[in-house]
Amino acid sequence: MDKKELIRLAFEAREKAYVPYSHFSVGAALLAKDGRVFTGCNIESASYTPTQCAERTALGKAVSEGAREFSMLAVVGAKQGERNTLVTSPCGVCRQMLYEFCSPHMPIIMAKSEDDYVEMTLGQLLPLGFGPLNLQ
Ligand code: THU
Image (cartoon, rainbow, N blue to C red; front, side):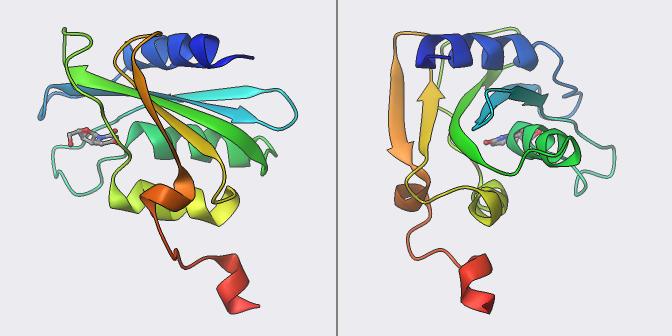
Protein backbone atom coordinates (compact mmCIF):
# COMPACT_ATOMS: atom_id res chain seq x y z
CA MET A 1 0.00 0.00 0.00
CA ASP A 2 1.69 3.22 -1.11
CA LYS A 3 0.83 6.81 -0.28
CA LYS A 4 -0.98 7.46 -3.56
CA GLU A 5 -3.29 4.49 -3.06
CA LEU A 6 -4.04 5.49 0.54
CA ILE A 7 -4.87 9.04 -0.63
CA ARG A 8 -7.12 7.59 -3.33
CA LEU A 9 -8.99 5.56 -0.70
CA ALA A 10 -9.40 8.69 1.45
CA PHE A 11 -10.94 10.51 -1.52
CA GLU A 12 -13.29 7.58 -2.07
CA ALA A 13 -14.36 7.61 1.61
CA ARG A 14 -14.94 11.36 1.44
CA GLU A 15 -17.75 10.79 -1.04
CA LYS A 16 -19.78 9.24 1.80
CA ALA A 17 -19.43 12.29 4.09
CA TYR A 18 -22.66 13.35 5.80
CA VAL A 19 -22.25 17.11 6.07
CA PRO A 20 -25.60 18.92 5.88
CA TYR A 21 -24.40 21.69 8.25
CA SER A 22 -20.80 22.54 7.39
CA HIS A 23 -20.88 21.35 3.76
CA PHE A 24 -17.23 20.43 4.29
CA SER A 25 -16.50 16.82 3.34
CA VAL A 26 -13.56 14.94 4.79
CA GLY A 27 -12.25 11.45 4.06
CA ALA A 28 -9.60 9.46 5.88
CA ALA A 29 -7.80 6.19 5.20
CA LEU A 30 -5.88 4.52 8.02
CA LEU A 31 -3.39 1.79 7.17
CA ALA A 32 -3.03 -0.89 9.84
CA LYS A 33 0.26 -2.72 10.34
CA ASP A 34 -1.46 -5.96 9.29
CA GLY A 35 -2.15 -4.42 5.87
CA ARG A 36 -5.82 -3.66 6.30
CA VAL A 37 -7.08 -0.19 5.45
CA PHE A 38 -9.92 1.41 7.41
CA THR A 39 -11.63 4.36 5.83
CA GLY A 40 -13.94 6.97 7.31
CA CYS A 41 -15.86 10.13 6.52
CA ASN A 42 -17.17 12.91 8.73
CA ILE A 43 -20.68 12.45 10.12
CA GLU A 44 -22.47 15.54 11.40
CA SER A 45 -25.36 15.97 13.81
CA ALA A 46 -28.21 18.48 13.98
CA SER A 47 -27.06 19.19 17.53
CA TYR A 48 -23.55 19.90 16.12
CA THR A 49 -21.44 18.82 19.12
CA PRO A 50 -21.56 15.05 18.51
CA THR A 51 -20.15 15.51 15.01
CA GLN A 52 -17.60 12.85 14.26
CA CYS A 53 -14.57 13.61 12.15
CA ALA A 54 -13.44 11.34 9.33
CA GLU A 55 -10.28 10.35 11.19
CA ARG A 56 -12.18 9.18 14.26
CA THR A 57 -14.65 7.29 12.10
CA ALA A 58 -11.73 5.41 10.53
CA LEU A 59 -10.03 4.85 13.88
CA GLY A 60 -13.25 3.60 15.51
CA LYS A 61 -13.87 1.19 12.66
CA ALA A 62 -10.31 -0.10 12.93
CA VAL A 63 -10.26 -0.63 16.68
CA SER A 64 -13.69 -2.27 16.61
CA GLU A 65 -12.34 -4.71 14.02
CA GLY A 66 -9.36 -5.59 16.20
CA ALA A 67 -6.66 -3.37 14.64
CA ARG A 68 -4.60 -1.39 17.13
CA GLU A 69 -1.34 -0.78 15.34
CA PHE A 70 -1.09 1.61 12.45
CA SER A 71 1.55 2.76 10.00
CA MET A 72 0.07 5.66 8.02
CA LEU A 73 -2.98 7.93 7.75
CA ALA A 74 -4.21 9.92 4.75
CA VAL A 75 -6.69 12.78 5.14
CA VAL A 76 -8.44 14.79 2.43
CA GLY A 77 -10.97 17.55 2.87
CA ALA A 78 -12.65 20.30 0.91
CA LYS A 79 -15.98 22.02 0.53
CA GLN A 80 -18.67 19.57 -0.47
CA GLY A 81 -18.61 19.02 -4.22
CA GLU A 82 -15.15 20.55 -4.61
CA ARG A 83 -11.72 18.97 -4.66
CA ASN A 84 -8.11 19.93 -4.04
CA THR A 85 -8.91 23.21 -2.35
CA LEU A 86 -7.21 22.97 1.03
CA VAL A 87 -4.82 20.86 3.02
CA THR A 88 -6.95 19.49 5.85
CA SER A 89 -5.14 18.57 9.03
CA PRO A 90 -6.68 16.47 11.84
CA CYS A 91 -8.41 18.52 14.52
CA GLY A 92 -7.11 18.52 18.09
CA VAL A 93 -9.54 15.87 19.29
CA CYS A 94 -8.52 13.54 16.46
CA ARG A 95 -4.83 14.13 17.12
CA GLN A 96 -5.41 13.10 20.72
CA MET A 97 -7.34 9.95 19.78
CA LEU A 98 -4.72 8.99 17.21
CA TYR A 99 -2.07 9.41 19.93
CA GLU A 100 -3.83 6.69 21.88
CA PHE A 101 -2.95 4.05 19.29
CA CYS A 102 -0.35 5.46 16.92
CA SER A 103 3.35 6.14 17.29
CA PRO A 104 4.49 9.78 17.30
CA HIS A 105 6.60 8.73 14.30
CA MET A 106 3.58 7.71 12.23
CA PRO A 107 3.28 9.75 9.02
CA ILE A 108 0.08 11.68 8.38
CA ILE A 109 -0.50 12.57 4.75
CA MET A 110 -2.67 15.67 4.30
CA ALA A 111 -3.47 15.65 0.63
CA LYS A 112 -4.90 17.98 -1.97
CA SER A 113 -4.44 15.30 -4.62
CA GLU A 114 -2.52 12.06 -5.04
CA ASP A 115 0.57 14.06 -6.02
CA ASP A 116 0.20 17.17 -3.90
CA TYR A 117 0.32 16.65 -0.16
CA VAL A 118 1.88 17.73 3.11
CA GLU A 119 3.40 14.97 5.22
CA MET A 120 4.02 15.34 8.94
CA THR A 121 4.34 12.89 11.79
CA LEU A 122 1.76 12.61 14.55
CA GLY A 123 4.41 13.84 16.98
CA GLN A 124 4.90 16.99 14.91
CA LEU A 125 1.15 17.61 14.95
CA LEU A 126 0.87 16.84 18.68
CA PRO A 127 4.21 17.56 20.35
CA LEU A 128 4.63 16.25 23.89
CA GLY A 129 1.30 14.50 23.58
CA PHE A 130 -0.23 12.94 26.65
CA GLY A 131 -0.78 9.27 25.98
CA PRO A 132 -1.05 5.78 27.44
CA LEU A 133 2.61 5.80 28.55
CA ASN A 134 1.92 8.73 30.85
CA LEU A 135 -0.41 6.55 32.90
CA GLN A 136 1.98 3.62 33.31
N1 THU B 1 -13.50 17.58 10.09
C1 THU B 1 -13.02 16.32 9.90
O1 THU B 1 -13.76 15.37 9.63
N2 THU B 1 -11.68 16.13 10.03
C2 THU B 1 -10.77 17.13 10.20
O2 THU B 1 -9.59 16.86 10.20
C3 THU B 1 -11.23 18.51 10.36
C4 THU B 1 -12.69 18.71 10.46
C5 THU B 1 -14.94 17.79 9.90
C6 THU B 1 -15.76 18.07 11.10
C7 THU B 1 -16.95 18.78 10.50
O3 THU B 1 -17.89 17.83 10.03
C8 THU B 1 -16.38 19.51 9.31
O4 THU B 1 -15.14 18.90 9.03
C9 THU B 1 -16.18 20.99 9.51
O5 THU B 1 -15.48 21.24 10.68
